[in-house]
Length: 543
Image 1: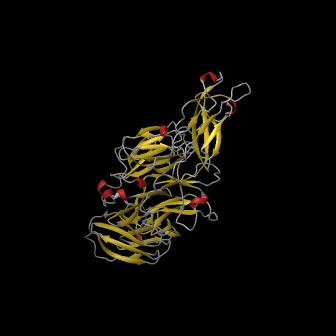
Image 2 (image 1 turned 135 degrees about the horizontal axis):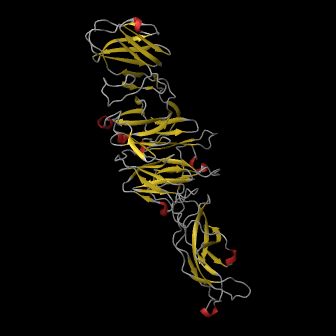
């Protein structure tokens, strides 16, 4: 009889140890199986420290400034913050937007990197508000009776908008009462001008620098004047023929104060959500969030993520797939799987599909289908023991990497359908994938650490249970590794009967006296990569 192990794989906890495929493990800790070998996983390696804060949980690398190194943004008090860079090409202000830290916020390079940290240092409320009050008009004193109005007089209505120092324009004020006006030309009576009283600026951090006055004479508001924000009135004598710029921002509302989950989509627009409502911004107008673009769902939204198939929306009920190339024409499709999302931070874009944690396991949503992809690897009861509501997860190196917390003890795992589960003795409270440097960065003990950048961890890999008829016994073994030493263990009926420190690839002898044993297993430990393990009843069976 012989045990020959290579092309190693991870755990399939749902399968009885006797029925596992030969390559799978009953225990796989602190190693990576991507190449089929038993290669110890490197620990997290320090990238940067973070300022003292309470329970840091969210991380973002702002890529601008600091001699090309960027700045690490972090948020504490267990806040779940989503940050995105500006969708505008060649943004002169290098703006960044985020949700989850109170109302939606934004800032530019000069604001968010002030001082020595923590960052972001300062922010503005995302969006531009409508003015505080309406626009009012008054008729000049020399306009006495209706018989003095010329035939060219037209009825005009005025509105005012506010503009930030970034050129972002907000929705208009309440319209003025209608007033008759006419162009002041040589053959028209005097008195055609209109005195307009402009509304005040609202309170709050909006950085408003400009007011724009618009006039509508035939249904469309046209720009009359652009004025400093402090100006309170304007006397309008602008001829109708001089008006050429139409009001664009009629529905450019500010995002709801409750909006979270900010996400970038192809086409230059952003998405977010609050309660059961999905929101979209105008294309290349990240400050503008028309209410008419909102979609309502039957269940509260837990998270959204953009994939190549569309926007996956995980809810407290069934998942949805929202598709479209324009924020004004997004189509919603509910998917036929009864698996609610139990952790908003478990939702991860995996490329062609997304994965999130449900009550029963990990759910993959791709195209028009969704399924529990861990159903063949872990039972519902085993999955619940990992406390899936605590999971925060990330995509890295083609794997779904998750961190969890059970009874005050942190743990982590990587999952792929092909290899199963790989578990790690690692802890992190948050993370961020740094695309520029291709590294997964984690918050661990108030320090930014990179996945796999530390020293090799001590691995453990235990095989399935092999059954052989009684009467024979293993006498020798061989471990082929990249370097040594490697700790080898042989188990009989679940008990360790041989524990040896292997120093080279030569054959080594095993203790005798176990001819009655039916069930055998092999375990390997250490910090050196192992290519294969062989156990046999005679030296001639070993390669």
